[in-house]
Length: 84
Image (cartoon, rainbow, N blue to C red; front, side, top):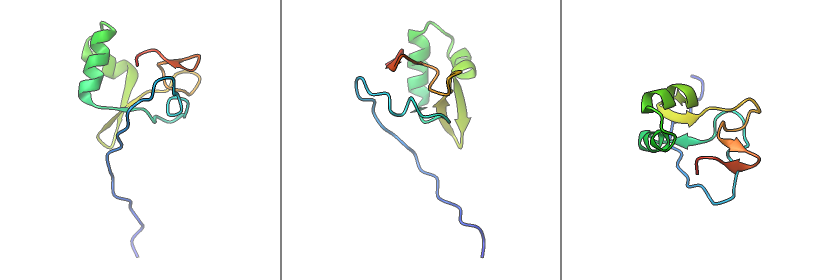
């Protein structure tokens, strides 16, 4: 019998003000679209390609915000999202 391979699916959610539940999980739980990445880059005054290189990883076709040194989302500071 071949090993079980789950089907991939797209995970989408919307942030809730003052919630950091996903951001506090290590391992890349904050997904974003290319359009969201471009908007964030623009707000940070960064070239979109540089933003992608510095702050995201791509896994199975999904963009994910990188973890920071504390293994939380790189944009989470003191329980507050710096880009929301």
